[in-house]
Length: 333
Image (tube, rainbow, N blue to C red; front, side, top):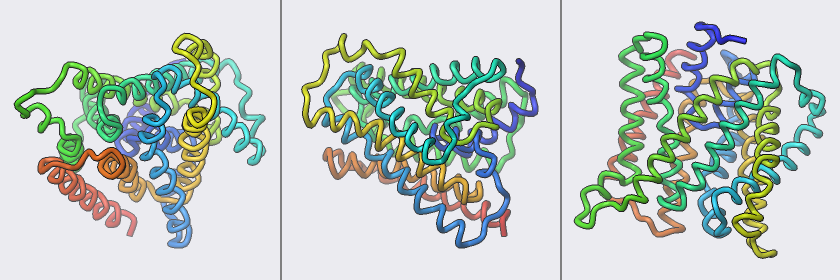
């Protein structure tokens, strides 16, 4: 069981277009997401579910904050209730038979599942130290990992236009997090803040590795790999709530259950549905909806107002999106 260089190159290219784990997994697993063309009606029908799914993911910070649970407990609830939701979705699509693994896929599915669960744990742990908006934005640093991996592992020389587009988007994302303003403040930035930043960057790397593995599993219907991720997380972390303390019955359980039912099962199903109807060029643009919503939620709900550099970052990110949209439109016209 070895990766081919050609397959890895295609994987790295896909990763640069879909920084979000759900979007990357869908693009890697579902061949229909790679169709070259779509009618205007189909494309419009794909935008709505894709944007709705991304918006749901962008609101995850509210639920984590209201639940007030540890990172391991939050991850277990996301996996357990996500498993229930994804099971219902696969049952509705009559795809439960695809959950059976053979020898050629079992090892890769289990490895990808462990890496994704670790990424979720790091994500929730980071949100205990930095804001949800910053955590989400930092997880979108994966295109930078892609360029590094491509250069170091494959000896690739990315095109100038691609480097410019990615660099602008990454610059905008970094500015939008407010990290530079934190570092320049008279009080300085606490060590816990930088620990949260490091967790996000490591988590982004792990989810990027999941996409590399997912290229071997592209014959699986969309949602099957996510089901196994939730199944493995539920089995591995089942003791976490007992160790950290079971949350009080009531509203807290509702917030935690929503991490699985809303932000995993429902959001992923919407994103998978949207991607099947969208050209890759538009997906590359719309994937920025997720961090944009997360930043707005931070601003409106938690009172984390955007500073000057953050506003500049949003504008720079918008310019990068416009540039990518113009290039995508030119290729698909």
